Length: 386
Length: 249
Ligand SMILES: Cc1ncc(C[n+]2csc(CCOP(=O)(O)OP(=O)(O)O)c2C)c(N)n1
Ligand code: SF4
Image 1 (cartoon, rainbow over the protein chains, first blue to last red):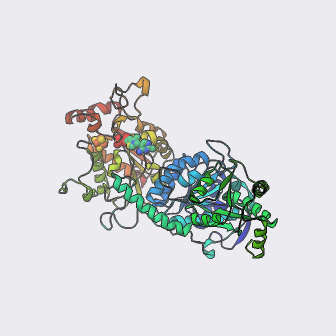
Image 2: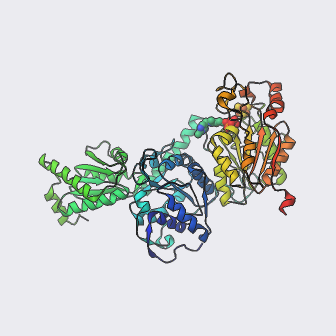
Image 3: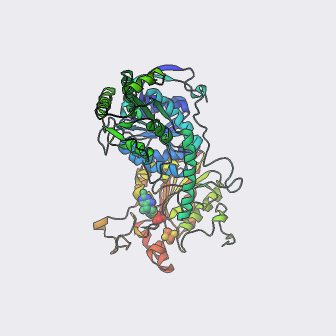
């Protein structure tokens, strides 16, 4: 297959266009989708681009069908994907639960919109619970929360690679802002940058007559006995825990003796990073931590960062969905966790700065023990600040 | 328990998973026998992919020496649609109950038929939800007693039985093949299945089938119901002829 993007180039694209290009570059053969804002343009661009590269598209009757048809294509041995949001994401979870049980490398791009229900078509981070733990299962899936257009390109490429390498359903979790915003992106051929986009192989219909030249493949997700199921899920859990160590990703800006560790994911992480940086330049001890994978969650790294801080502030465009993951990771520690919850609202660096200043002022007046401005300056001098 | 292979067992039946798990007198294994013989006649063991739904159909997840996937209730068709779109050389067959095909998965059936997806559906119409213990199905006959129509299905309350094959025939492309057979006539059923499998367009074969366990009928009553009672509401025959071998050349 010739590379879709032979020479690295800069382009000025929306997030949805970026996803279509990334899926092409990753070698996805087919997309199945059902219209929903803010995902629509992924389908629009894919439908336009796909025939030029010999790829396929089908607009299905609903997201159930889109999810299951993606499973069917994966079973046939090709890289396949779907994209949805909000109420469509709810329906998609039925197929994702089957993919989780049968370890099928389905890739789904989720552009979060406001919820619950139809809510807004614009933006939120309210689909974290669903992306991580939707379906009647244990959440054995990979969820990459992207923060910006370049991220969207690179993690969409990577999603195919990880899905096929580990045989896990993989979600690229974006949002309406990132889907619709336009900006500069560097497009490149993943092979030349050493990004693995996966090798697809058929689950069904491989060479040879089943029963004569090879055993038939009998794939199922139904079990008769409790013990049978337990054995299957225990094996999946063991394997997921192993994978977790290799794939958990995060980004952090450390701060020795940080008074506050600001934690955010997705596009909010960019605002958080800016806010934390500005405060540090003003001599305030604020660290920054962004989980890139929400499943598996980078627990160890977060614990390490949080234990060095006096408190943790979680900022998100949801009512405590990331916060719950953070609290679970920090269980047993005494680091207090505070939350800045703005479901369905964008979060600016300025409002985070203000919030951080408020917390710092309150803590100062109550006389905190360490991580004050002197320590912060000392850290700056040792070059620990980014 | 290891049974000697029955002499009349189709080649494509998997010996290791026999005896099968269906109840005595059940219509499913008869339908699967006709299907097995059709696959044998075509010698398509390397092309047919078997998809089974949730319902008593799931008991067939390891029934054949065919690559098989068992899916969720009502979702077998979209899985096979996705498979066929990327592997056109395969012949996928969706094995579903009337609940899976005509109730929870009906949007998939209607849409696959309307888009003329070249997949084959085999719908076992036993007039009940068998796997879940005998509730009313879309196909339950007027007056028929089930767990959720304990006084008999009253069309004024819960409508008339859904004629799935007729509904599909109405929306399917002219080249589609649609037929209704019965486990009471396996030669006819096999003939329908041969046409369905060979039709390079959408095809559906509904088969009237017995469920003595949920009907609570003895052997004679069961047969009477399948042979006489059901076809009064669900007439047998071909509703759409598909594309014949001669016409394709
Ligand atoms: C989404 C969902 N809803 C309900 C069920 C429970 N369920 C299992 S089988 C079945 C009905 C099966 O009836 P039918 O499709 O007619 O097949 P049969 O058992 O009669 O062969 C139902 C409702 C399920 N598995 N999944
Ligand atoms: S319950 Fe009915 S349909 Fe299911 S196996 Fe028994 S007889 Fe067959």
